[in-house]
Amino acid sequence: MSKPNVVSAIVNPVGSMRVLSSREVNILQDNTKAGLHRLFRQCALAVLSNEQEGDSAEELLQTYNDFDIRIVQEHRGLKLELVNAPASAFVDKKLIRGVRENLFSVLRDILYVSSLITSDKRFDQPDSSDITHLVFEVLRNANGFITKQIPNMVVCWGGHSIARDEYEYTKLVGYQLGLRRMNICTGCGPGAMKGPMKGAYIGHAKQRISNGRFIGLTEPGIIAAESPNPIVNELIILPDIEKRLEAFVRLGHGIIVFPGGPGTCEEILYLIGILLHPENKDIPLTMILTGPAGSEAYFEQIDKFIGNTLGREAQEKYQIIVNDPARVATIMSRGLEKVTRFRRKKGDAYYFNWLLKIDDEFQQPFEPTHENMASLELHSDLPTHQLAANLRRVMSGIVAGNIKEDGVSLIRKHGPYHLSGESELMVQMDNLLQSFVDQHRMKLPGSHYEPCYEIIES
Image (cartoon, rainbow, N blue to C red; front, side, top):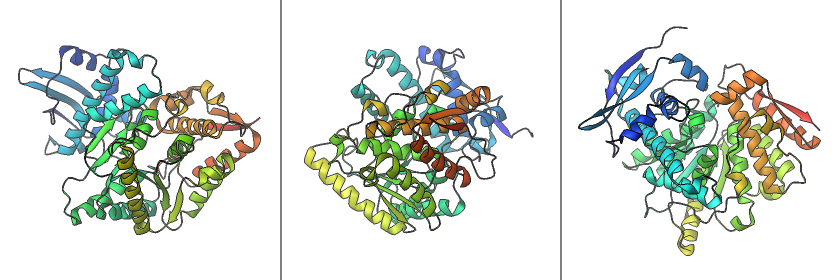
């Protein structure tokens, strides 16, 4: 493998973070398990490699195994020293402005979460309310709230591994949203996370909107596999996938889902599971599944799986629109108007959905070990929200086994995850996952895919 082009440089800060305490410097440079240097280095490398195609965190870290990032403390404040960083992040040996902003966002969020969790006793054994407040505080610390702005934040979910026509369609939908003055929040990566932002950026330009928001929400386990795309102008790193998902639904005012793989299915199951809670029955949150002509089979498979596992009520929580970007945007616009009226009537904040009830099953971090995956209860006699939570965990584990560094390492060491449960339900799951494989939605096109799971009917 050829040696990559690299650049070493000293980087000045942007934003408000200009000084660090000696304790903060020490923990960021600590290579032990108790320190943050490994996490900081991995997330920083992901930000610096945002122009590169790939979805393997392990491969990225191996390619730039001699990359390092160091804190430089001077009497005038903080600087970062980058050693052997990807050259694509630089122009004439100067770090691109957007990359620099995101780099310091990494520093901000990693330090803040570490400080919050270690100093606040609430988070030793957090209950549901504590977890919601942690999500709130991370978003607030990142200046993620504009308090008086009318609801206009549309969350766009979808796969990083999508066909070209699907990617172009996400741009068309984003364009229609941008023309209607909506802002975009995605998982910050490539594919269906990049396309809507790119389209909305053009829509904003036509409407002469200069302060458009393109928020990327990520977490340490996935950022290296789905590096922030260049359109992201507000990068926020949550501690884990569950808090990232909660941040999406608390911060966003409507959800659009494009074609994707197990990660997108995880997001769909997460939101449906929440919307099925009786306390959320009257809370407006428009959810649209959409894609170009030719994507019908994908949505039919998802819809069939949800109907056969979670029932008709679950299917009523979303609508499917194929090949009609303008209609998607129009319906979303009407949905945002409902959200505005509802929040105003209830006195709920425009910028954070406090009223949404999220059960503990959707908040507690799930570690996708072989033991945990094998012990998941997958039976139709479970309460619907509990089954949705466990199906979400299945998809989360498959994402980990496909692209996350720790998950890939576990699969290499112990073989594929074993998934077992009620016979008919497992047939439904096998059909869904196989459709993702057949449609090349597990990895980037051209990548050879070895399944990280085995379906075992009980």
